[in-house]
Image 1 (tube, rainbow, N blue to C red):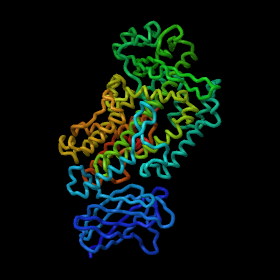
Image 2 (image 1 turned 30 degrees about the vertical axis):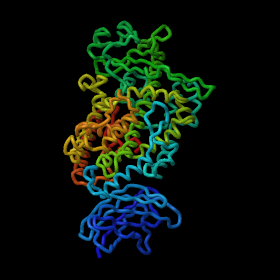
Image 3 (image 1 turned 135 degrees about the vertical axis):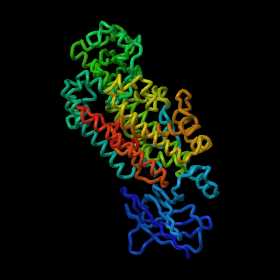
Image 4 (image 1 turned 60 degrees about the vertical axis):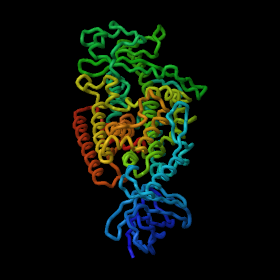
Length: 617
């Protein structure tokens, strides 16, 4: 009788193993096997991190194995089981891989296809078409869209983390990491001890220094020592945690009535302010988004304030960016003076502090929350709803949305919810942060997520004119590496533009993002469909770059872009493309490391060895 060797790999995360009964059935082109209990006498099967093998004998030839069915049944107490993959050795000596990377809960079951990526048009066998359709039908019931706040991108329909599908919840280790990191951040900021300092006026700069006394690294120490200086202030707009606001000023706005006479002591080229503008030496950061946003009123005993400043900056003869004028609100007038470097020391410093405060609010709520976390969640939900696990684009993207929906759900539970951390320690808490997202949606466009286009739209593309914009330099290198990789993968599975256009699952994925994520706004520029391999490659680059590199740049990254520990792809051409991708990223790491050797203040947030695959890793 034909005999198969079945190898079963259990996940290595905490509590991944199970004591439940595990059954296997094989479905082939010539027949189906009986249900077989996978069990070895006097052996603890399916332990955490284990790879167990079993011999399965069947009564008759099954033909080509099309599906493997795994069932989990209660032994004593139910425990969840994380199945990584199954490998099948056939009676003819062939090996077939069946990736899973899913949790089985309760009396659960999963039906797996072999690991070859397939488009819908490649499936001609009824049972495989049916499997594909059922998987999406099930997922669309599990992954439902919900409006958390009017005007927001839609998010997952779950009130709390435990309501999420098990496959996208934090595993125990990641959940503990979230709690520990949250607690560590609170400890580093002395939140419990110094919470009153957020809710009352500070007396001197020593208060500021005590807040960050426990944070110690090269960058934080240098910033602490030089934060009051104009050079550091300007540098942070280029390479700080929010390097996406500064733009070249092509015309002085009427609402900022600054004159040459006011700033002439800052201008080094013996030119008028207007001439400096014409020569491209003037830059601007406008916090108009904050104008009229309600300040936090959750504590009736505490008055909190927001500014909506306009900051004018100048590129000096050393090609460094420095501030030359600050107006703290949008409407000019006697009660809204323009602050200058020639003013009294602490008047000028206080104006810069207000700008930095406004920058913080925009960074946390728009640059970080909206434009990386919430956007990546949209991509993730659409992917799970419209792309089956066998689809090559699912296999490509799944690592880049890992835990994204979970961490966003946690944020809605603990951080940005009513009475969350935002309300306790943020001047935009109590609803201001919600108003900000609602306003910023009009500027959330597809082009603004295409890194090269976004840089160019702000007039910041010239390396010769702006030589110290490392966020731009490193970001372009990483963007191009991702684009080359996605183009290779697209080329492997889509032989022509027509195949792209005819992939209805792909088109449904793209349309879901447009309709639910961007709320069907034509002005967003998000495509409703993709019609060519080049367009698809760019779209996938946007998804991956946003979730990995862009998030790292504005959130101080950890690591491992290009590393795919879950092997969803089994085909050699894709694995070779991944290897080339990693090689390109390693070259970028070397370039950045060599540059940073010469810098007192190194910039490494976009070094690929510090970029996590997703916003939550």
